[in-house]
Image (cartoon, rainbow, N blue to C red; front, side, top):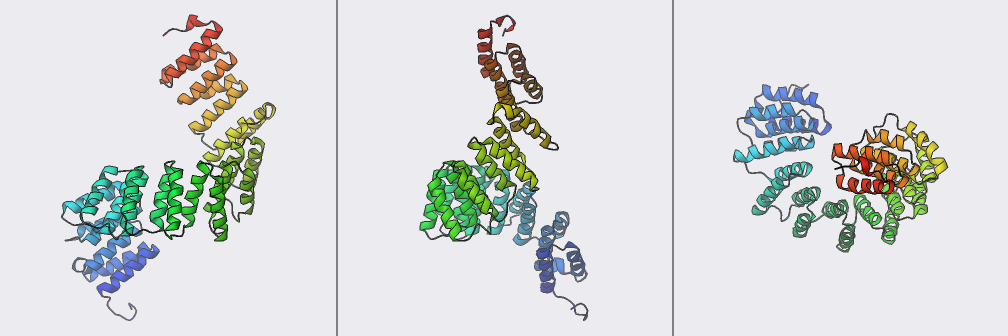
Length: 436
């Protein structure tokens, strides 16, 4: 068109900007922006202004999008919504809500898309009170009746905030539901440990004729694993296999391995793992966790080594289970395997849980010097109490006193520490140095 010397009209410019936004080419969008300025389209044609803001925010150029927005003589609800949505897409949720408030202060009424974006921002930063305020406005305007996207945004906000009662009320009020509605609520129940309710809604979903998606199956398998509902898990496994979903969704295969492992059916977990076309760090960790939880530390460590041989990098969760695995192994192997493990932690920053597990492992072995070295690095009451417990078991009053003084300094678990120290001193007649 340009080669033939034809002048683009506002619709052509807007469509071209939309194309740039869809493929993320900001540089080409800026060229078109210059064309729009040359023909004075931005101030005269709202369709061009809105497309320009949308293009910049979708390309991640939020400052440029904001500049175009600020320069507009008048701003439509579409322009405001494009900016708010852009801030949400780039995880600038506070700024998104600030824009939402400025929009209302200027007398612009939000549309359903604006509300959905604002609710996404509320969900992401757990701004429940603001979300409830928006909820009231949505209900007042009667927007919730047939808008499933808006309903799902509201449901997600309450689920992420952990207020499942309100999430359930929203769900029950929705006249139109889709797979995302059901999965959102089921996933919320799983996150809050309400596995029985998750299974109830899963069954209701199927009764009402909604086919579960792979994500729904992942959620329900998590629920089955948490309450050891292995028969329900097997039923889901059969359905997943019948639909041919395992080969297309690694997360689903991982959820099956995890479910069988948590239910104590480790042979089935291994069988599913072996049949997966692709493995990732989650697959390996789920299998390792299953062996670890069944007290089969040697097999957990064996798979841990295989995992590394295959080129997978363990994450913090993997290391946590491996530490537990070492704790289940025999006294002779434990010490050597532990030092082998330490070498694998090079470059990995141990978490408090890792260090707490190490203290527990040293406690089992009576390795007090190593425990004390770790203790000085840990502000965790669990670790301090683990050390004092070990002192009680092994009759080491001096180290128990040091641990107690550490607890005093950090005010960590003091009441429990006092009881344990008293028991140590009573059994070793060492009250002379103990005074409150």
